[in-house]
Image (tube, rainbow, N blue to C red):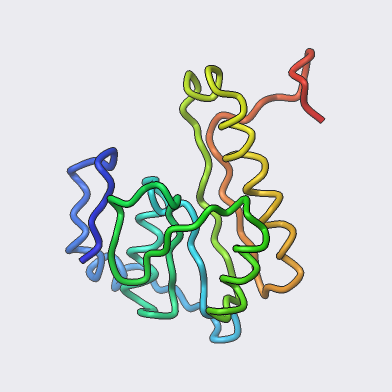
Length: 157
């Protein structure tokens, strides 16, 4: 059984995902499966993973940070996404055709206090996913909600 992480709202009832699936018709072409949903330790990723897993079963795999051992269940894999070699090997091993990227850190204070973590999670992970995009049918990335505007000496490129 998939267990949501502690920071997920207790109001979410994961047993009712099947009822949600019935209300929202979604058809993913077979050529785009299997699919990897990254960032399932967050609310968006966990909900997407649960929804898609209910509908497409073992064709949907979920990625959680390797250190987050509390999130476990069928189809859940711990992986460091910035490790391009491990990501590439995972794609080959599981025949991944699409990736839904939902990871990132929007904890503003945490990102300010630990810029290296913020860069690793919000930049390097996306770069690693982009590096394998040409091998996929689809790569969809959901951005975090705090996006720097790109002005005034933020040290950005």
